[in-house]
Length: 358
Image 1 (cartoon, rainbow, N blue to C red):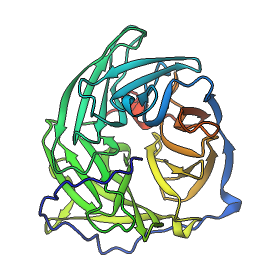
Image 2 (cartoon, rainbow, N blue to C red):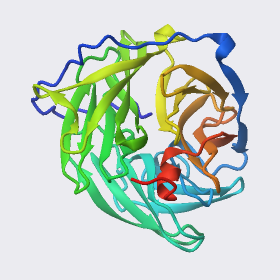
Image 3 (tube, rainbow, N blue to C red):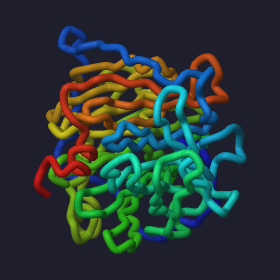
Image 4 (cartoon, helix red, strand yellow):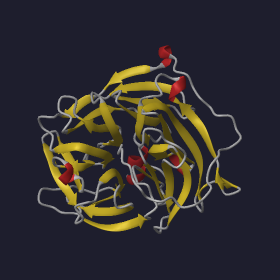
């Protein structure tokens, strides 16, 4: 999650509202929630990533791709790869030193150790999404082209991708008191056309469900310096307009409200689905990943061993290893990673490895 105040002017579109259906919210029932622990695999002592580590992409070789390879502000324009606990290497450095990468989604997995990987990354300050292709290895340097951009994008912050090649982005303008327009939702068509879909308060985590049926988007609210709400909206995906519209207004339904579960002041950050449709939600500041089943019932809470956990992705040889990244607890100037072995393969991994038809 990037907390960034931008002076970008908004496109004058009156986009607001939701469907008339009553929101579904689910209260945590402690007896039915399984609590598990992750394993820290990249520690502060081993890490080559900085405090701005963000985004998480993974391929079938178990490589983890994240932003901010290096230390300090000067490494904001870099992407790195975690090959193993002590084996981390640079993947890409943008020619623009002002670029700030904050999200990663792998869209083409490597066929082997020497074949290229293609990923998407969001540039917060450049208001663009880049397509980056390269081979993982010491001394290798990937190349990039612009996939989509619009100067009116707030950031983008995080990315979600459909199996057909469309991209959705979230973004926020972090202020003490937020309002509608402090967050946005954009759609980039498979050909790279960018279109604003919705304006909310702070938007962050974003994900597409199996079958390209739904888009999930998190929204948080601030009031006088305090975080007062964290919820998740569900949109119906439309391949032509991005999401289903009624009278030019996006139809959305609130499906998760953390005020009805535990603490609405804990920010949602990254979100991912597995192939069964379970939704995994990082909770930055609480050090947890909350797992919801397809009916939005909380079923599992993962102790990530990283209090400031930011983003996550499934990878590994079977796609069932969940990687989580964030600031190291014992040195918040460095980025750490932990893993947890799930029962279902990740959705993105499944699509990349052609385990389903689409």
